[in-house]
Image (tube, rainbow, N blue to C red; front, side):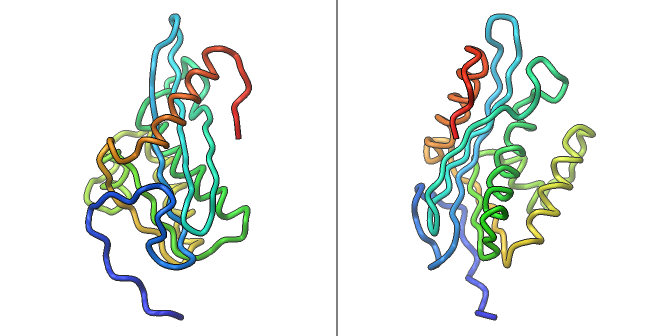
Length: 166
């Protein structure tokens, strides 16, 4: 097995940046918004590096107790790893997000206190074990723009009744 890569500083990794040859670099984001009396939570994912892929979708049914921003953030990271897994990718994944909560909970800096987030955290943790290495990197919101746009597109599509793009 190859020598593991050196730790990454908390730094901007633009979509499409290859940190290590063959690595998958993922930007994920979640959004929550009330539209015409309904609450929507959606995620956006932009995969770069060894792949090129974008996705958005609802993180939870509209108006449900799970329709929160944090659930949407976790759902984005989960959707990205599940997409990579379906493609039989098992290499290095760099998950970049602007959610300090998700990044720090997955890095072990924060404990998961919210009961509703525990299943999402546990599922994401299980998924990470299917790859050679998964790194969680915090990026400022201004450097996570495509994933942010996709999460907002997910809300817009859901609120209008349009199908989710893939």
